[in-house]
Image (cartoon, rainbow, N blue to C red; front, side):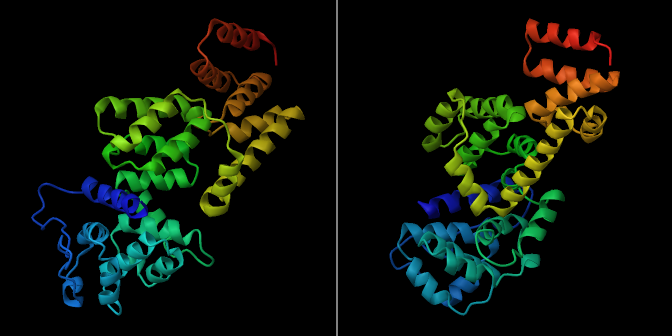
Length: 327
């Protein structure tokens, strides 16, 4: 199961980044689809990065993981090290996989291949050597859309994750996406658009059969905060924990300023905030505070967002009443 998930993710990234004009030979498994497998150290040394995932999948299909691990011992080529890590993960040995991937030089790896070692290193003690290179690759748009979307989601940057998921091929989605979409639905600014993303993917027929039922159910759900799942996410994902803590601190400071009638302070805190990615509470406090200090352009901007989220006659009437109130 784990091997299938890893293979689906990495193969998906590879397909996204293929260029039909390239003359390079496409990736293939260096281990043949047979029980003998043609496994040898010499064969494994010829493996390129684009061959890694297909080779790992062939190992899983033909129960050749043990033989490949044995023959690859001592091989220092990057693709061989990466393959050993994948095979250790498929055997539910995360510590051994982390030990293997710790031997890799991030500077020599294709950007998309940084993601899995980064995720695994985030659950281990010590420095995550893949964090800075992966962040730089995402920001410089050197990673595929799926890796970028997952990276943004891991940092609780839901708006950027949604925007990037729109560029992915749903055929490459995995159960991990179902978890991320549920979190994105908990974030009010991206909830409606996340439903539209999933519905569009289902209509297009690109979603893997194994995920269609989960996504169809999720569209109909109003997700509730799963405290146990959130605690696990905070524990296993330091980037998510840091982002969540920072966001909670900002929201608390905003709430305290508003409750103390420090409306000018609220206005300064939210002046450069994009209304479309703000929480419902932030939108409301921003609108009321901007109105209180008499900042008409800012009041109008947040009023538009309030009405966009709840386009009813009652909302329009209430907004008009607030606008007419003198600061």
